[in-house]
Amino acid sequence: MQRSDVFVLLDDVQYKKNEWQNRNKIKTPQGWQWLTVPVHYTFGEKINEVLINNATNWGKKHWHALVVNYSGTTYFKDYKDFFEEVYNKQWKYLWELNIYLIKELSAFLGIETRLIKSSELQVEGEKTERLVRICKKLKADTYLSGNGAREYLDLNLFKREKVKVIFQDFEHPVYPQMRWRKNEEHRQDACATDDDFQPNMSVVDLLFNCGKKCTKNIGV
Image (cartoon, rainbow, N blue to C red; front, side, top):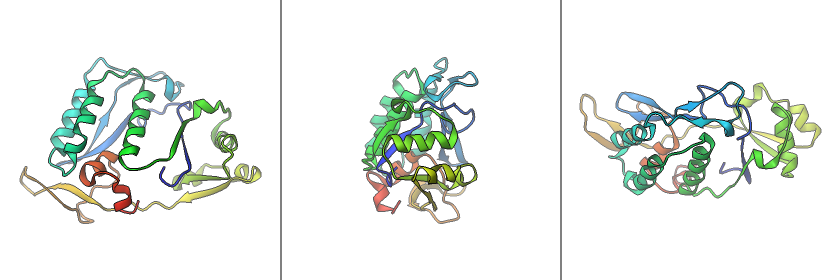
């Protein structure tokens, strides 16, 4: 997102069960755990059609997990009011919660990239064709892609429309991360070594441990 001029949120594509649209990972003394937003889902529904299942108090559970696992971090106090407010609110649609969090968290991190929902562009097509049409709609000459997309993108479609594709060769940064002393419940803030650093956590792990605009400080 930070490297982009415009970041498009694909809210009108098919929802995928057991992926990242409704869950993410946080660090705990036992390793990592999922924080999952329960949803009502029918196969074929688009992300912006998926309803949150509020029959259970999932917000209270999430908030409790953040308090238990991150209250001892350096910057938790700076953001606790925001997250407590988020989890006390009753959200109806998954996309509303997701986009609100993406916008607010990117602002906390000092990322000022313009955000657009794909549904606002009214672009049709499947897979690569859809991505190319989004680029053309926004008059973009370059598409920034994750490295894993090499396996399924049709690069010839981008080439035909004169849209350059750049694949990110992402290397996960190691940053100061909360860790627990062995055989103790006491936590300590310290620069984690390669051996005890837990990668691929939710961005809240970075935020609570490193604070505002930490993307610039660690060179992301």
